[in-house]
Image (cartoon, rainbow, N blue to C red; front, side, top):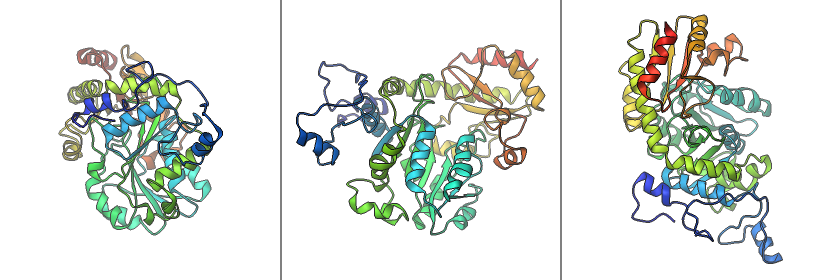
Length: 415
């Protein structure tokens, strides 16, 4: 249990999983690399499987595991969430969340400006199960409200769109959703908990790829769902029938007792151990990366070869005011810039020596990618236009290298 005197982000983080003392006094929760757990007698295992215990036991690691539970406690403490569950990837978190929320005949209101796999999951995978996706401009509050009806199961957006770098005004969207009893589900992968207080801005459900900032240098894949306990599930078209039997949030009850067990996309204990260690240095890495990104974005704006630079903290960004209000002075380590055409983009990237040509975000290394030919490479030209992905766009995740070395690598590649 977190010490009541611990108020700081890092203090809570470092003490959040210490309610159960390790048998050998280990400071870090060990890796419980086991599938099953022994019980003292038949009644004890029956009670555990029938959810009759005051403190739930671990029964099988596809359902829960001590190492994973330790990381969930840390995330719960620093996020302020009511319930947390971890998955094998960010897409595992998103898919489990919407398998609990959506149903045949329902619809999701969202922006077309989404990460490629999220867009594909909504547009193709869920569509085959009878779920409609209603794409709107999230800057247009009236369009959001007009898209909602009695079968809207959720509103979804990314806190900063990847790679468009747009920000939805969550504080003003939230009252619209509450008026219509629609939960707000937000992917906050781009801004971790030390940089953004999701609950303050009306987020009901948060999904995160812990592969990114949390893993501490791309050591492992993972995902998280955080339920902030702010939505009345008795008013949700699908989950209202679950509410009477749920001892906690009907949404998380549905996931933990049914969806996650049946889909099996659980986080493994080795990943939980790596990501627990990564989480402990999150603030230091995030602030350094974010500062590097801001300084680099300002530098890129001075270069004649660069057609356009996008980073939400720049004075040139239409989202600067929202960025300053929402993100505590550190709006993340992702930026984008445009060169004159795809040929120029490829030639530039091929000359880079320090910056790595790779997918992923928020590795300790700086990473760069051409989204149109990679993440969205299998999409048609028409679909890329709808999503807003141009052939001239380059996405960069700024790492922990010295800023002057990153600048020098870009300069030599542009020449």
